[in-house]
Length: 150
Image 1 (cartoon, one colour):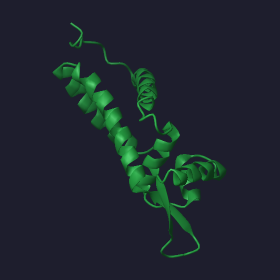
Image 2 (cartoon, helix red, strand yellow; image 1 turned 90 degrees about the vertical axis):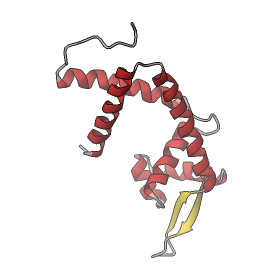
Image 3 (tube, helix red, strand yellow; image 1 turned 45 degrees about the horizontal axis):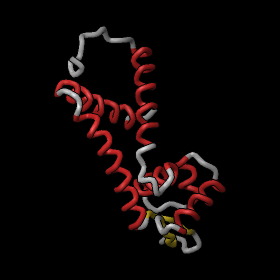
Image 4 (cartoon, one colour; image 1 turned 135 degrees about the vertical axis):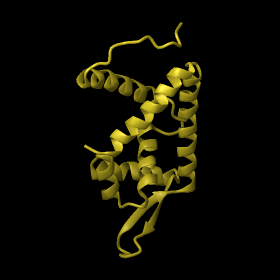
């Protein structure tokens, strides 16, 4: 009976943390392989970051992504060449250039998200209703933990 959850003892926070860390890392690695094949994982991640934060300077974007300014300059140039991002002048200081996600970039993000969501939905469809409910609740809790910060 693979879709039934056997009663198990609840682990201590460190034990749960260890299992959860491994599960999340494996899932992230698997989802990273579910890109559209057209764009790199780093390009999709950077586009997602820029899309959620709004127009940024390259320095701000590099800091948000945790990469060096030169690395972001290279990535930004590639994304500009592919017309996935566009430049704009800062409204308060015309000397400052910001970048934002262009329509083609939004579409690339949507394709990537749709593909990853489809992968997860297919896997989740094989679960029983109890397991699906538990994962739904767990997702809510995980999001709360992440949003609460350090």
